[in-house]
Image: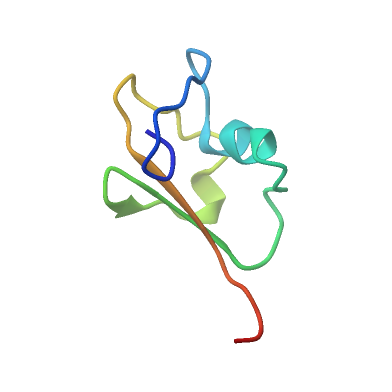
Length: 65
């Protein structure tokens, strides 16, 4: 699951590779990621491999409002 919707990602996908697939850079400011309800620190995005049934939430900060 990615942001509440079914999503296919390759085996061994990392948080960083999922972000790349969404058009987000790992060094982009204002991005947070939670996997199965746990916030994953940015320093672990490159190495954090997602499990088969992982629930991933990607949040981006927006200005204005």
